[in-house]
Image (cartoon, rainbow, N blue to C red; front, side):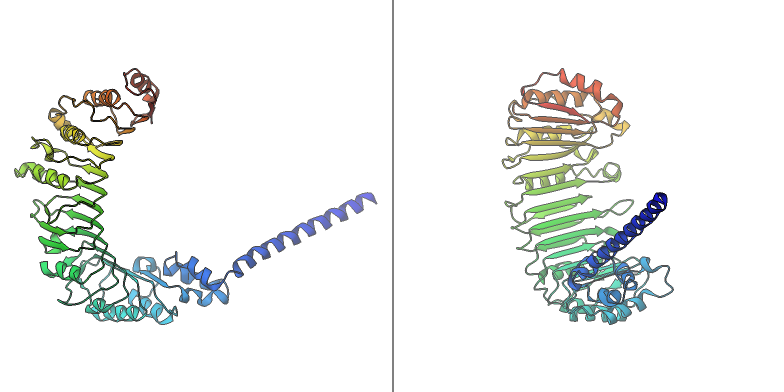
Length: 454
């Protein structure tokens, strides 16, 4: 009898636990159901439109929630398994979309897009007061940007990427545009670039990536007094790129980035407000093969950035060999320097350290050494007592304990009286302990310095 009661009691407990689990599941569902439509739409806005549409199968309530999301993000690669064209999908999504304001419209296509359809879509999203517009085409056929785009008064962010031809009208205005990204697009003429910028009276952020075989522009002017952030990247053509020139008038510039093959950058006015700057030079073998040593351009650009507080520079490998003079300007504001070292530019680093008396953080990132360049190492004698007197942190990424690297580490330990941390990063982690022992034997000025090998 007791066994029967025990079994009955056990079954009762099992049923009660199942009921409790079921109730917990209901509570979990209710937690989602209790969210407001606006909050659910905010969550859906982090998904591409295709994924947002899929949520419509969850329940009747979810069936139309995606149409209230103030964002449309369409890409034909996402619809490859659907036997419907991207053109049909865009028309359908725009027709069903019910959000009163469209904050973000993004369209990426890897197939040709008919100008009539694109113009119709742009006209529709402008009517919804779009604030962020992103168009990206990779179809090996240039798509002309519709003139309708230039009538938009609400756009704040504009991104044009890929096979797009820019041909703005001579007179127009984007009164709200603050961020502009032009990535590997083509320009109808060199005036197209200037005309576009002239219609952006409040522009603060400009990013330009040039692809030589497409852009059709070699002399470009940036005249934007309001500009605070500027990024330029140039992808050279082959076998030998054409030269190009940028004339830049942006006295309010605070952040500057350059990457690629360095052309002739001319700053009309001194960059006194730049705080953060990054320069990465990546020229091909044609630099030496054609006798085009443009080291002077590199140092001219770096001198223009001598007001920077944070400077990152990777000046290339063989491009620096012509350097034969000290920097004429002091880098009084510089507190952090990140430098890409290789066998042929240690002397550049040395020269820069001598004119940066307030440097506190130094980071070295070693580029791959070319075996043919071993003879080019020209670090020279490390003198200049006191030039690292305020340094508190030093990091060397890619340390291989080569002779000139060891000498530089010794130099830092001997000169940096306030050094708190030295971090050495190596490729082969098996030698961490033995390397740390050797580094610990080097004399140092700072008794507080902690050496770490990673």
